[in-house]
Image (tube, rainbow, N blue to C red; front, side, top):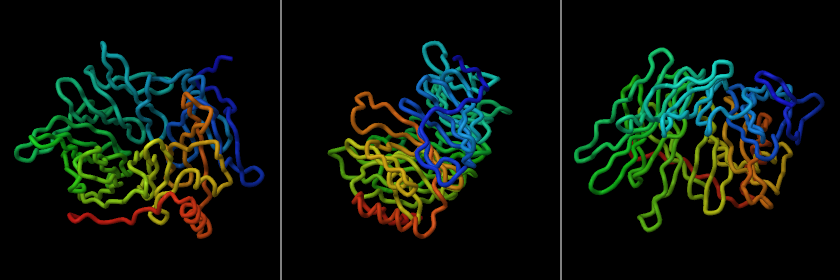
Amino acid sequence: MKLLHGAVVAASGTLWFASGAGAQPSFWSFGERSRAFAVNPDGSHVLYQDPAGTLYRWAQSSGTATVLSAGLPFFTLDAVSADLSTTLGSVALGNRGTPARWRPGTGYERFFDQPGIGFALNGDGNAAAGVWLGTAVRAFRWTESSGLSLLPDLTPPAGTTIIGSEARQISRDGSIVAGYTDTTNPERFTRVPTVWRNGTPQALLYPPEASLAYTSYLSADGQRVVGANAPSDPGLPPVLARMLFWDAAGQYEAISLPDGWRNIDILGGTGDLSTVVGTLIRPGERRGFLWRRDLGFVLADDLLATIGVTRPDWEFTDIRSISDDGLTIVGTARLAIGNPFQEEIAWVATIPTPGAAALLTLAGLWTARRRGAAGAPNQSPEA
């Protein structure tokens, strides 16, 4: 059967748990070789791709999905607008690529006629951010109304040369952009986390022992930023990776990773960044996590156990996106054994509003599984 754009179908997959007659599904998987991209702010819809490559918008209330495209619009889908109306990726430009947005019914729109990569869309898909690769490596902001703007560089410290800059995130209204600036001097390469407000670059502070720090996600209003600093390479003085929160003044708060985890990949957060999701990483293992100040870091399988989902045959490798109320999450799993090609499984879960009992359960699970207690927040000396 050929699926037409706009067709509504019963989403293929498996409902694992629901609380009460007529209740919305608490956990739904979309089958092997599926991919979940994002959940919208109110948690009502999820954008995902099925094993055949069809792109869908899935409605949580009905369990049905609307076909958006018979195939993925881009070879790689780089970003999705918060309202799930617009996707961002690359289209061919000679032997290179250039960013373009895609919408059902209207198709592709290139941002400019030079090489580049798009990394972020705002709430309604009318603004974007990324890196322009025309004659240099420059962060850009694009809007439907004004087109392309190359963002100005930071003023480099004496003896330092700016290599380039990249914009990686954009606020929902499209006015604030975050990314990083790469600099070098005779001693070392440095990556400086950077925010552009009204087109003006602002360097964000970061742990003094680290030379590589980066932004990962912006709050909806662009006033808070979350990111991390990278761990040092083997053979260099030890630098521990930590999650970093920045305020509007550029001051940071560092959050230690749980014991045994070496690195972190932050993939999303609630609109106010009170909750952050992503992947914790250590040699040979990647596990999805949710972080909240009152909980610390909680692994995805521990979190899902609170709604009755226990899958020891699955590795929950990431939590990719979360609704603004923190109760709907989407992510990726894979079979722990018998999966030589590392095929992925997309899933979505609704977590009941956590009361005191649920918080104690999560804390107990975390401790019992001996995956390390969440590090206590510590304020930077500069803050």
